[in-house]
Length: 466
Image 1 (cartoon, rainbow, N blue to C red):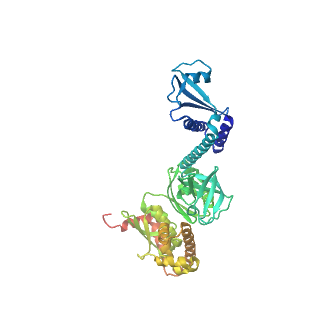
Image 2: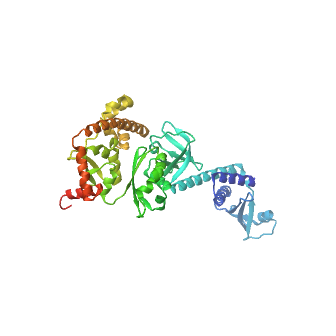
Image 3: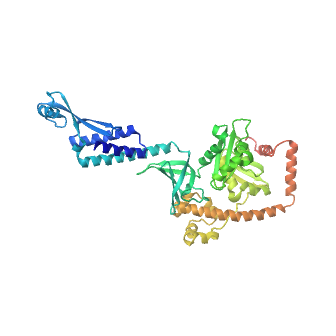
């Protein structure tokens, strides 16, 4: 019986990957509880577990006395001599081996259940510790279940279940069971059962880890990633700094013929990635962040972290980007609230669409919910945080994700058409090309780059005392 129990416990431990010494400690604790249940809380005992031999031995220690007052700790001279066969006297110690059969089947089954529970607790703690120490690291797993209702994906990694929620997925990606997937460990939550390990493909840290994998200079610390701004699946801006004058940070990240950056782009489902050189000077950094647009002037408010950008008419669409994406990402990257103005001080009017154009896709119920809460345009909704939409409208996060993705797609497609019409009109403006040519000649004659000229012009226009 001893051998069967030990082997059963050992098998459970092997399946769960529990250390043998930890298991021995658990078995000793559980059988100690059995002894106390049978003989009382004051009993003196010793449990010896030999995993190699598959044996458990339980010893009771009692004092030999003439008159027994506590049977759990004392034994009479007559009983001691009868059990041991030796001549014992009062005051000596008597040690008795207790066979497991004496505990009865019920206590043994209870011990087995307790051990199983303890092993599960150890397993949960091991999972929690393993993934808590891996937060921010990439894991590679296999998709084994897709929950269509919630849009969640369950991934198996090292026999553990990881959760990829809907809002941590790149919205353009389509997954199927059996696919291999890479993601970053974002969070580990303790619960009633096993810990919930949340992984992400949308977190900026995932992009940073991909840079480390594909670009040795980043992994070695020669190139430092200073900041990342990302709209997952669409576009990202990464600011990098080289700590070695001989190495061009942007060139090293892009690689020969773009081979390095293309590997990252493919992993992120063709997400466009702009790599720019970081600068401590906010003027220079803002200009680089708004590339490829060429800026005329930057009016800075460093105290309030705001900047107004003046650009030529033909550079407005480049500076703002589709759906305002370029200026939005540049704002995140630089930490400044950026406003783009046409040359001459006229603020660029942002393109918008009436929500009624999406009434059929939303359905009457949802459309009226938005309308009642005063969301009348697409830009009103896109600019509102996801949390506010969930709280205001009382709809599920997954549904909000679907709505936002649908609105952004329709909005950007419509804006592309508007941009094409605008470009055609701008091309007809008299003197626009001539003005740009004169400006370039003026900069060239001064021996400065366009970037230096913008900074110089900005400094010249600063009010006195700044």
